[in-house]
Image (cartoon, rainbow, N blue to C red; front, side, top):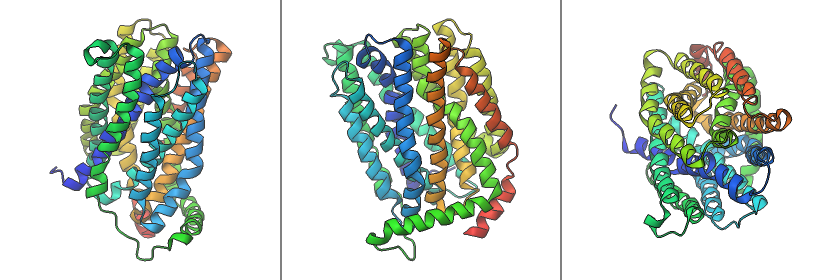
Length: 422
């Protein structure tokens, strides 16, 4: 597939904001939160605080995403909304570098608003997929975005890890200063590599865009209309229900893996290496899954990834050594990007192209609602049982439930109904 400049520019945003997902959400924030901002606090308490911060940030996005998506479709403003939320994320990432030791509440607030910026911008980034890819190429284009994210996020994360392991090489005094600089580097990286999607991705203007003063009213009106349409689209409803369950489990693993490793007593440096392994394995694996979606079917490829995730989670409940954690990182890297990218491309074919932002608003709403429950349940189970291993039982159940519902999705019927609403 020859990659067009517009397609590459769209995928470049994944390269940009994945720095936040990798270096902050999955990497340094959980470690720094537990060891620096929550120093002297019991492990179960810091795990609960981290899960609560993830949940609050996601809950806010839940309420905003569908309305903002409807407003963006009405006004032809997907890119404007994307950059508004990206600016919030960039600012909060830089702000984390200024939080003093022990100030866990301030760190949580910066992190929560960072999640809002990251997740909010993704609503509009995802919705632009229909503008840069046809139904026939959506699997590969979506996979390209995730692959770029793994590579870009992984490269910056590798530099950040080296900074923390060898701060003297960068003229830094210690690892804590290196982590602070890492937060700042995420902000710069995110801002700079967001420019291509602004410059080169075109967004069609609706024929009857509302005036600015009526945008909010039109957004609410369109939101209620979308609710009614989704209720008629049985295939979309079934897919969203299944997606809600299995993405809950996947996002929880992404956000809580490092915290889980710390709770088992693994060294933070080793956990950072494991995250790097996932990133660089995920780059080619996401591209391979894009091809798998075309050859064996998108739904079957997603189910394959979910099955591997279940096996990995069962294994994680009994692992004892950091070497096992590395092997788990390889396994997760093989399927994580594939499940995410193919879910996005499958959904893009089940919805009306002209209403992509509002429909992706619901898609991201469910994804973030899942991220409210998963980390919170993991934190609560860790406190109630005193064992982080037992908290993984909830993740296995969510994967299984999501897979069962996904099996009921009829892709052909969904695509036909979506065309009727365009």
